[in-house]
Image (cartoon, helix red, strand yellow):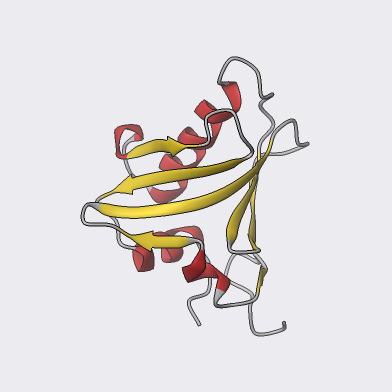
Length: 116
């Protein structure tokens, strides 16, 4: 969809998928992620099937990919690492991440994702 491109060039399909991938909680935002470990570069790929797609260079061994995922998100969102917590999916590519203190709109803006 041509109108679904954010300022960082991240493509989401469809546009409304951005808000499907994020849920407001009483203390912050819950993110649905699909992680691809052992990628050539660590980067956010956008939204697909209602999930944020994240490529990580870290291998899925001894929690390295989980640590890399949480660290990447904390840096991208400009919050402390303590505000980003793995809620579910420790041994899965599909993860639920809770970000304390940010609304879904703030998370989308920080990640350069379109809200329309």
